[in-house]
Length: 55
Image (tube, rainbow, N blue to C red):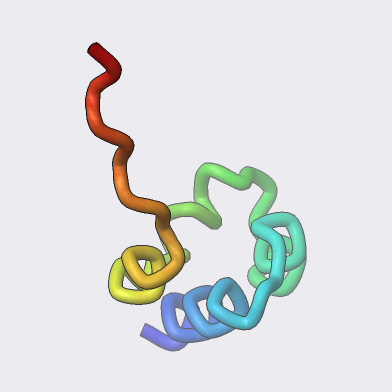
């Protein structure tokens, strides 16, 4: 739980996956991705709406 919390907090504060991997001592970024959670509410707040279909 601690590793997930650290990775999620670092990600939300703008750290790169490489930075998080270095702190967690992961050899693979794939492992780091498992520990990093995406804050979907923040993502929705900054994401542009999907454009309508062009006719």
